[in-house]
Length: 222
Picture (cartoon, rainbow, N blue to C red):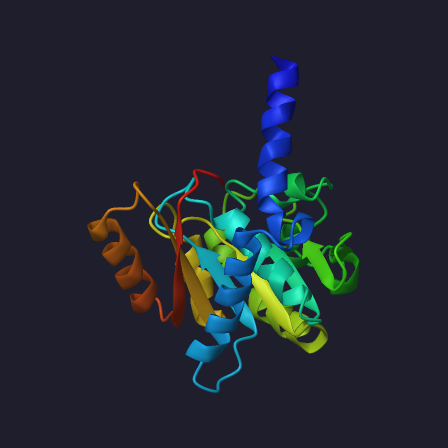
């Protein structure tokens, strides 16, 4: 049983880092296309801070956020990947690192920005994990301190990609989107209904989000 779980975990990690582990794979090529299309959709405006979310948990948004960030780093951009999903953090597992210290510590002013960002094995890609789990995560993401953190990140990185909770599952994401330049909405083929996709889009728009694109995911991954 333990060995089977280890195989499953390794498979998930491999798929989540596909753009790095297998740059020639068709999935990696698709994320490069998505990366380029986001810039085309910006109509000349700088899209530096990007939120990745989905209608429901389990749609594959963490995988999408990671591969999108990797594809940007592969173009030579300095990229910061942030795990803002305090309710179900995932990125520390994919990169085999500690969950804390991370974003929650930054929000609590417990450490400077430079000590929260970790270098990954991927050139040009740094990571800020979620930090310890928080019960008042919506208020933290909606705070002036979060705006300051994003401003600090923007002064050091070309792109900031933020993995957020599912928009219909928690209010956290809508508390953050108006502080960012764009939102990518991930939809899962065979699971996301038209009504849920529309509800997610309307919820984001009401919160002031600039939806720059959508990704249709065929896999059932985080």
